[in-house]
Image 1 (cartoon, rainbow, N blue to C red):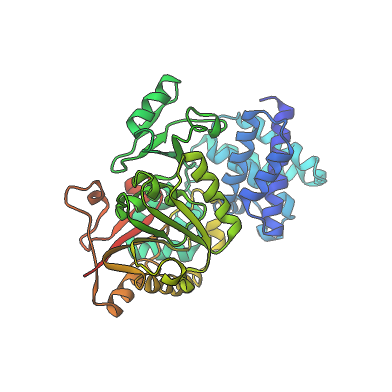
Image 2: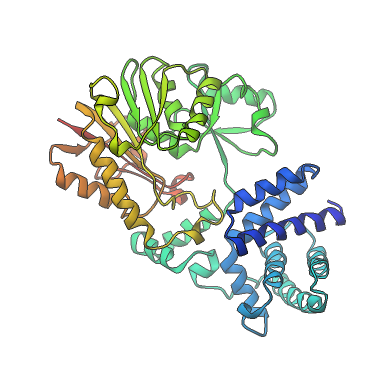
Length: 450
């Protein structure tokens, strides 16, 4: 990467971080807008820009702690642009190893000069030189012992997880969330299997791994570029879907010719997986509040060769059997709205947007959805409750409240010979812990009546 390219990537990263910091923009939205505007950027520059934006956003608290160690004044008093520029420099020194340290210092000083901070460029140089000396002594991060500061998470979230998992497990969990997300694929079993798809990719020089316990899953070991250009995408042989999300349909266990409802469907990854597992033979309804979001379900269904899905815009809590033919459903998937605390590596700024008050509010909505779902399933039918969070208020406590109010319902554990047993606890629920299972954090439970 040439020097001018390095400066441009850093300048664009600063521009995006300004939007996130000052306007409350979502990091992924602001970054995508930037990338779509600067289409001339080389692939390596785009990758570098992406890593700077997401890395500085994730590591904001750690970078502030580092900066405070070297600044001789409270960092809250530093000009906002100076703070962001120093974050960019410190992030590269602390967490990247492919750029020469001297180049990091030089380009960060230049970034200060080109953003009307000429008078403070000497301070930038001094702070980064101090950090460089600590880095060379392998002591740059050694003084940050608090988990929340070292791994860059809010105190309330770290405390919540310590209460659940303990200190050591929480540190490992937070560390896992700070890695770059991997890309998982789901083989469309209407056309192929995960093993067959792996062979097709291998013939094109693309390395993948099968995912233990996830029958349709395939993980890309390394990929830079457009996913839609990979083999068989246009033919509908696979979709992008995290391994944990695939387990929801595995637990639902849809069968051909059944009537199945996906209550919170958009963008449709689980809906299309249901149809694939049914052999495209049956009756699948996809519900979502917003018709615009259901367009994605329709588009995905077309590409994947699926014809048994109908989409309908509705609030599930107001949806009744009268909306169809009056018959109850064989199975209902309730992938409910949640805080997303199991997917923090995929959403760089999500850890800073959530508050302790969010989960109790969401839990009320989740319980309403679950309670209503129980009225729509036939005797002997199945409900699957699913979240991508690690907050007990949205998981275990919702299920406990539901079961206390509905004694005719019970948890149905995975079968003893099922691959799902590796994720199942003594109570029959599935808890996907990222640092143990190397996939997004999820909570899943199958409920049956009669």
